[in-house]
Image (cartoon, rainbow, N blue to C red; front, side, top):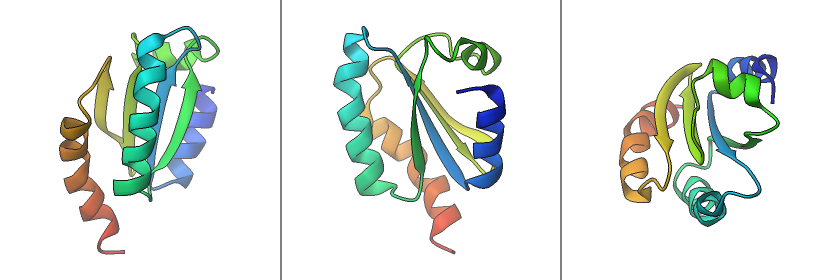
Length: 107
């Protein structure tokens, strides 16, 4: 993913979650199914995009995503959530729920 692609996503989608990973990261492999399930079940209107950190180094540097796995949520083009490493699904859900419901329950 390029910075331009991210800019297009932020402009065209009301909410985008980026999941930074790479193929040799064990924690990334463990965390992804949990993130995917949470987003599908609780936050289905957020577009989730997997980003290979090795292939997207320019973007990672620009948005200061310095470790993986990394999660970054944009809503209305603004950063609302950032997490790195083995993040707690309950904590992530709690931090995303309020802005998600404010944005989508009124639609």
